[in-house]
Length: 351
Image (cartoon, rainbow, N blue to C red):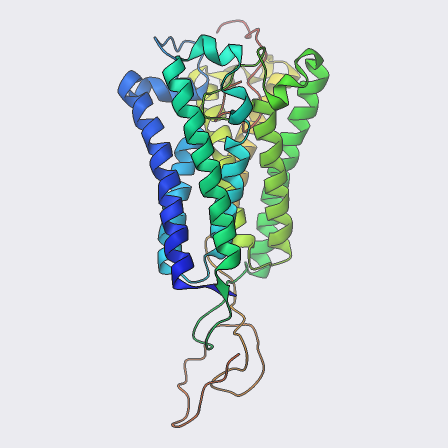
C-alpha cells in the first residue's frame, strides 16, 4: 500500500509542525546560553555551570533532523507511511510523560512558570500532531495504480541481519543498565521511570528510565522487523538508530573530556563497562544506519509488466516492454536519558 497525495501533504505538514516546535526550544536554549554551553550540559560534563538549565537534550536535536527527513520523504515518496508512523510513535513516547511531570516541584524549582506553561502546551500539540500523523498514515493508504508505483521495500538479507544484531544488541545493553540502576538505587523507583520530585529531567524530555526503556523496546521491534525484512523495517530502524546515537556520542564526549581511557585499568569494573557501553552504542547506531540506508529488492505489485509473470523480487528489468504490450496491475545525562547512565558520583582519583 502507498499513500495518497493528500495524505502525503498532510503528513509532511504535521511533521513540519513538530520540527518547528523542537526548533523553537533549541533556539531558546542556544540564545540563552550559547551552543557551546548547551552542548557541554547535554554531554553531562560536571564542570558545566550555567545561569539557567537548558530545556532540551541532544535527543531533541536528533528529533528535529528526523522530522525534517520525514517531511521531505512524505513529499517525495508515496511509500512514506511507515516513516510517518515511526516519527509519530517516537514523538508520543518522548512527549507523553511531560503531561504529568512538567508541573511537579522539581520542575517548578528549575524552570519558570512561563516556560512550564509553554512546554505543557507544546507537549499537547506535539502529541496531537503525532497521533494525527499515525492516523493519516493508516487512513490515507491506497493500492498502487500500476507496477510503476513501487511499494515500500524492506532491507536486503544481509542488511536485515546486520540491523537486527546492531539494534537488538544496543537495546539489550540499555536494558542491562536499567536492571543495574534499579538494583543499585531502588529508592528512586518508580520516579526514575514515571517522573517525580527526586528525579532531575529536561523540561521537554521524559524521565531517564522511561526514555531508556522505550528506546530499548523501539530498537527491539525495529531489529526484529529488519531481520524479517518487513516493509516498515527501514524507517523504524533508521529512527531507532538515530535516537540511539546521542547517548553513545555524549558518553564518548565524557570519556575524552576526562581522559578516562588513559586510566582505564585503574577504573572500577562498572566504570569500565560504562565506557565500553558508550562505544558500543555509537558503533551499533552507526552500523544500523549504514545497513538500512539503502533499500533492499522491491516486490513489484501484480504481474510483472514486461514478462507477464507474477510478482517477484528485484529491480525493474532494463529491457522495455514490447510495443503494444499492456502493463499488468498488480537524569538528564547523555541525550535525555537514552543510553547508559553516567559513571557513579565518586570520580576516580586524578579527575
